[in-house]
Amino acid sequence: MTISVLVVCLGNICRSPMGEAVLRNEALKRGITDIHIDSAGTAAAHIGEDPDERRKGVPISHSARQVRASDFTSFDYILAADVSNLRALERHVGHKEGSKATVRLWGSYLSDNKAIQDPYYGGLDGFTKVYEQCVKLSNAFLDEVAGKES
Image 1: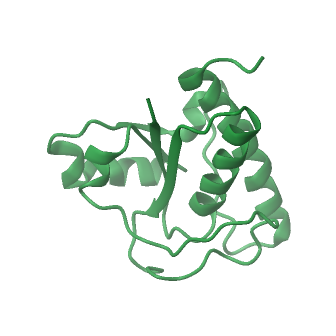
Image 2: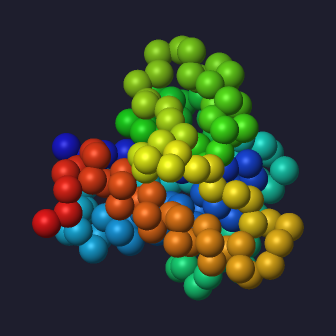
């Protein structure tokens, strides 16, 4: 059975594409290949743009897109980078119309329940922190949905 995951931030150029790439990489390290991962933003400001070049060297081929109503019926999990985006997802019409997706703050998979801070207006250090957080969150998520790492 394939697990499908959508990682969501505001513009889909920093946190969510990095989260998508890191989650995919962590799943592959565990030998998990039956997983489909994508990312999107709650806002339309960056549609069609490439991920921010400061993304810590994480390889990804992605064009920014906005969350669609169909995402709520096609993904098993929708993971929000922060509470603001979680609330936007919960207000989205797709969330109300036949949603099968579990919509959660990605940080809720760890006991600290921290949001992923937006590094867009900062320096490279912010992207490094986001990368490190995405690695931890990816493993916590995979532990819960696919079983503990051996």
